[in-house]
Length: 323
Image 1: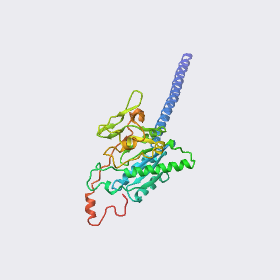
Image 2: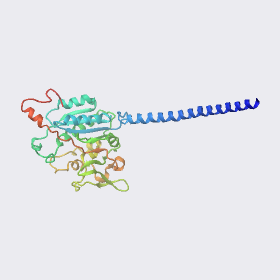
Image 3: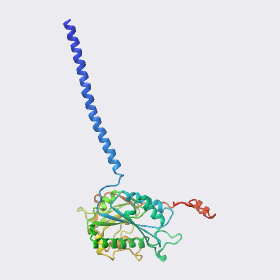
Image 4: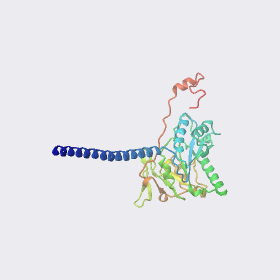
């Protein structure tokens, strides 16, 4: 009898031991699972945050965009506006190649919510410098009138701010020429914000000049020695318009720095930069010029043969619509 009781007691103790083991194992598993779930939630949130407006603001970046009326204009400006919406420190300076500003561009600014951090200007390219008919887009300089108009507006705006005693210092704002057909990472503007007063910042540009990437070449000390450009490498500054930004104090102290109709093809960048800096004094960005954060992409010209045939009958597919 006693032996039977002892056996039952052993079985009971073994059963309790198994139950306790399972209980503590369950708690441990839940802890690990909960921690993993929490980490997953944090990772997911961080992923979302990459696409949300960055609450941090740094120096004001004046992004200059020349634009002109064409079938893809609204599409390209809309795409660009979505990038700018994500970067609160950007102030958009849009300059239309026209005698007056257009409703189409105004509507893009309204729909994107950028009315309060943008200005809409117009400056018509002189007829003798305007591309005609089937002229290739490289035949004559483009955007000269519009970029110079933007520079004039920025200089006047910064001078008024300085004279009014506003807190923004011209040395802590920057100017970037942001064409509407390129592709931009929002990270680029974090890099632009690092440009020091009195400096011109430079970085690589993808898909330009016949290369996968054009980039500044640095020495061991991180100074810019030159560029790996394959197209007209003899230029004083053989880089793309998308590959540099300027501290605005340089523009204020050098009013002659602007673009020109009198320079040969590919020399617009060199024309303005020659007044502001030398190659060795440029500030390399984007992880020592090892990251590509902007690409020289182009929108394909749409085929509108059917639309042209329709217009010959005095009709339009977009009648009453803004495309």
